[in-house]
Length: 274
Image (cartoon, rainbow, N blue to C red; front, side, top):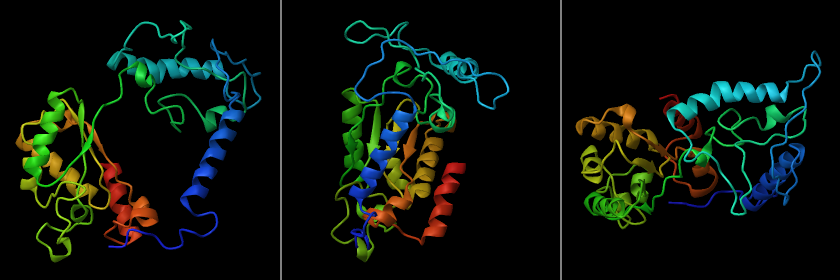
């Protein structure tokens, strides 16, 4: 299996080039948003209202809309962990800070919990709840990995993160000739729904989130998880978790793709839709 990708050293296409491009974009975005790197703002900066009729959105009014339509429902579902947040120096930390004014602020950055999600996918982020803590784990057989997950959960882990072996990542059963020497290495071997049932045995699927680092067969393994949950009597709406589902990364870097790009993109976008 070729894990390299052709043309990686072409100018402007390597991972280092992409890193600098990304850093440059982030730096430009922060400068245009009216913030200075390295300086801490101690209190909210309220935006000045724009004159009516100039075609630009009023930031204070947009903040009120965000609080009413996005923040409010989120707080009703999950209140913040405490009434007030402060730095270690005792300086109050507001929920959100706005620049004094910008023509493209809402288009480029927006509010937390709203498109384009530059300021976070949740309106309150970690003020609402801490991040999930889990160890990336998976090896050998489904039974051995299951024992590992149960061990970690008993010691305070709040979710599981599943590592799959290379044959599973590229759709080979454990008894396939191409899988020889790779079964159960760098991850757990999953060849069937029965394997997935063993992997998730006695795990409280309605209480812990499941993260699966899987791309090419992501839809298949997600369907297996759903089937196991049904067998255990867990309503699907109680399930939480993620699948990596990033097939483009496989073409660019690791090489563990199965199908050509077009049908692969169809599969991952079908997962989005589901």
